[in-house]
Image 1 (cartoon, rainbow, N blue to C red):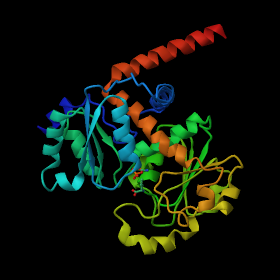
Image 2: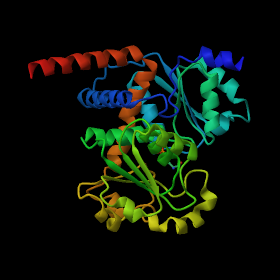
Image 3: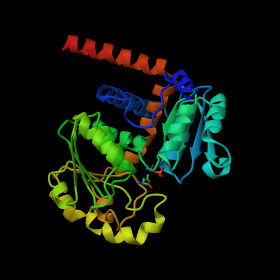
Length: 338
Ligand code: CP
Ligand code: NVA
């Protein structure tokens, strides 16, 4: 029965992480995100581009959120769809009713499910039992929507290339894990500088190393890591659900702060990134967070554009394909002219 269900839904597209993508598909998604961003600027007043018209998306939030929730809800609205917000506590995922029943029911009502949960196994359960695409809006294990928007921010600035050195300074947490997962499909140089005992997920790290696509390093020396960096990235030291460890983490992570001294070791053109919410004075100083090398607010804005692109890819693949065919034809025509 389980196997039959998995097979029945095998063709549907989920976005739980990067394992089903490859470098070409990520770049395609970035090109589409650029198009979506441009379109929004040009047609802000009168939007006639509604590829999600008539579609609804159920959004389950079991943890707090500002960026993810607003960017998904707004993005779905702008594409002509309708988002239904469900507070995890009120529907009781796995407690009031089973993950399987929630997945089956929401699939009857909706065209996709966006979920922010603690256990990654629960989002995998939702994906197994739903007949509609499931999108990971953050779990304890990973945050792929965030890292997609981060890498896109570098891509749109013309900074993305195989040798780019991205240095994540801080906890080997869900965001770091997604960077590692990305490094398993898209070539770049990724360094994680974290305290001992705060290393990333071993399974994801081993898989990314085994893929042999990127140069990936894990170190406990933030200064060595930051030297010649093109990107200095950080996230909170205490993630949602770890609040009891706050005091201990403040002490352990103190040497892993992004400040002007650390930034001075990076390339002079380096950019500073943070997925937010940020704590000035902890993982990053106010001077760096609000300084000229910070692209942090662009990163947050790009969550909207990249997730809109992802939604069209998953929910209206015909529209997504049409864009890429036209894009390729235009590029070919340009090359012939040149
Ligand atoms: N970066 C991010 O996911 O922000 P929220 O937790 O506010 O959604
Ligand atoms: N690592 C953080 C990311 C917040 C967007 C957390 O899980 O709380």
